Structures are given as structure tokens and as C-alpha cells.
Image 1 (cartoon, rainbow, N blue to C red):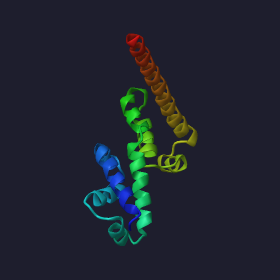
Image 2: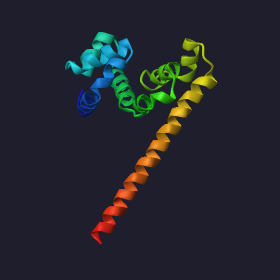
Image 3: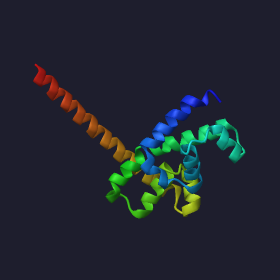
Length: 148
């Protein structure tokens, strides 16, 4: 049980930071996170789910990783560029963690269409990152010129 302790604290902190995104999780993941946040240990949850504590820790870590990702939040910011169907695809992929193949099976949409939607968002995220870096560089440059 000892190796899980630092991980547990880190996961709880990250979950608290992204608590507004928790309701968007699929029902079974939402319930797992609520139980974890209520104070149950990995071992207690493992007994309830009939799995190993390491499995519980791994599942929670994966969920936290998806919740803390910026791609879906970026999609929400630029939702005018995506239709309702595409937003569902992005949510399923970045929040629920579904693969392209699974989304294709569930929605009946082609893998190419789903992949194109995901790539479109990734391009927007890259463009935003570049804009942000340029703005930071310009700010640093102006600050360094002021100091001279």
C-alpha cells in the first residue's frame, strides 16, 4: 500500500483542479472518481471492484490524464469550427478515451471522418500554441528592451 500514497495525493490534487470536467465522464468512470474523492483508498476500491489496487490506481491515473488534457477544452473554446456531431467525436475521444475504431463502430461514421475531426482540432491546438509562444517571446523581448 505504501507506494500508492504519493500517487494518491497527486491524483486527488489534479482531480480537484479539474473537478468541473468530472461530470462529463462516462457513468462508470464518474462513479469511480466519486468513490476515490470520497476518501476511499485504492485497496478499498479494489475490494469493491474485485481487482488489484494497482489496477484501480492505473485506471484513475488514466482518467485524470484525460481530464487534465487541453484538447477537448480547446475544442469547447473553438466550438464554432465544429458541428454538434464533431463535438461528440472530440468528447468521446479526449474525455471518454475511446479509440477511433470504437467511435466508428458506435456512431456509424467512417474512421477517416473521425480522424479528420481529431486532426483538425490538433491543428488548432498547435496554432494556438505557436501564437502563445510568439506572444510570450514578444513580451520577453519588450521587457528586456525596457531593462536596457
